[in-house]
Image (cartoon, rainbow, N blue to C red; front, side):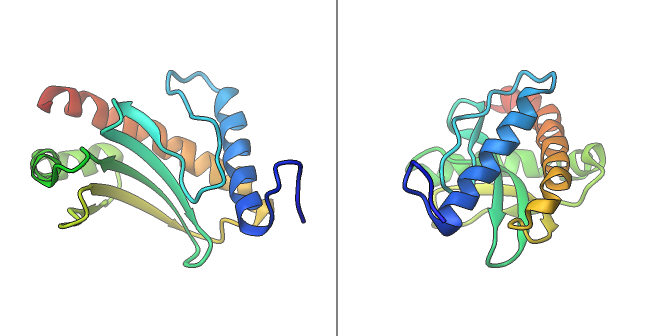
Length: 155
């Protein structure tokens, strides 16, 4: 299976998933700007600059969808960890506001940190995409609401 862009298999599915998610998002009332879809396993959505972003992810090997906050100040692990820990100090309040338990990943040595929420399902099952889009968009909105103001206060 291919298309005019020369994509096949998994890359085509990834591109299709993000294209459809973006179309679904654009029908909603939201100030978040989604980037142009690419054939990747994630779609970085700038939250505060490029250093703080919401990154929805699909993983067909381990069958999960993820919405995460990525702190990625290039080549500055100390700064990444500082901001991560300032947010982690508010973990109980953040998780209460989200009504979710998050996975807090400092990722020592990787020059980035992540705060993640997972949904275990097969992201390649197109019949479930409307359900997945609803989950992802809801969580993206919640992450925006809960994290944006906190980030702006700590930077």
